[in-house]
Length: 280
Image (cartoon, rainbow, N blue to C red; front, top):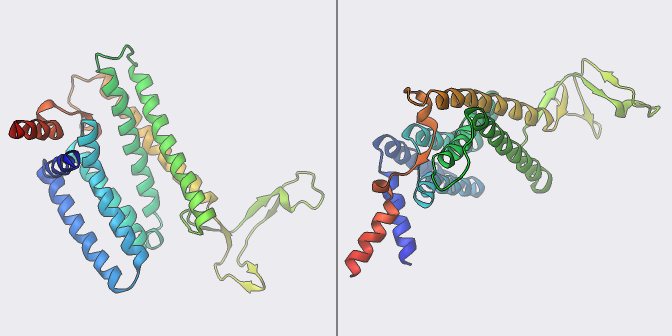
């Protein structure tokens, strides 16, 4: 019970530590609560549950900072909060994914960049830890950051595939295309590619889908997501490489790199010491 109470208080202190991130958190939380009430009034309980999930996700960055003693730069923390809101509330509930075709692309590009920043910081923290006996070069740090980001992106796409396959969702958004190339159309089964061009309508069970083309169920969306994730990860890896090479010079990239928390900002430890002092 003591541990839970201290964790709760430490997370509250972490949330309010920086004025900018605290303001963003409070504004976004208020918006989510309003949307959740509206969804309940409309009896859309699935979206209401999604709002609850978003409120939990808003606390995760602060929980990570408290639990693992890692300091997230204010800029990174604000972007993470806005990213969650844009992906779940605007993207899913407000249908921005379908209203704005580039919405998903922008978010996946940003995700690749941020994931690379997190992967980079993990290596950077270990490089500066005297208890460890290895030290990676700037090039290898950039490679690890890139691979970490691409792994996160690939795992996310796998999760989307399983959600669509076993839960009947449409996480892998469909794409309308007007030509297909496939060996499955070869009647001789000799692995010859057959092409169908200028597709303007598709019939299923005798009914025209009315889409103006052929419906690709997820492959193109998945590949586009991985490609823009690649771009985001590669971009940060380049900046990260030059940041380590010129660490003594100021760089905007430090706004995205988590670092080890200072002892004076280890709120969980400070609260625990205060608790023990008050008890004794």
